[in-house]
Length: 93
Image 1 (cartoon, rainbow, N blue to C red):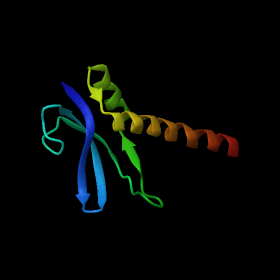
Image 2: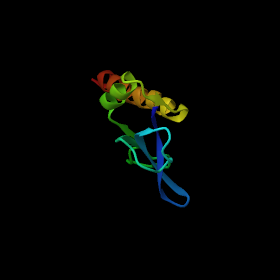
Image 3: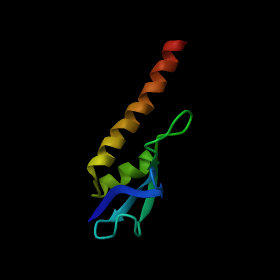
Image 4: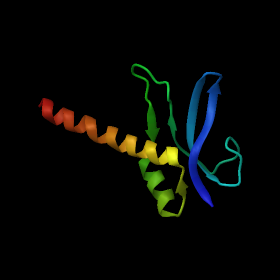
């Protein structure tokens, strides 16, 4: 089974996660099929907190890949952030 999950990188006390498509039987930080985004939980200032290739995520989900619980939550957050700036720009004009 193919899953979309987070793979941890970074150093002690400063995590950084890559969002990857991988075989469920592989280790968390092991080999993966494709990297589709990243998540930086300690982003501050102008740092990007969530970035993902939404088209590729939708493609893999349509092919039967299962998203982990955290990735499902991040997809919702990403979609909400993508909609929010567009509405505030139109209100400012």
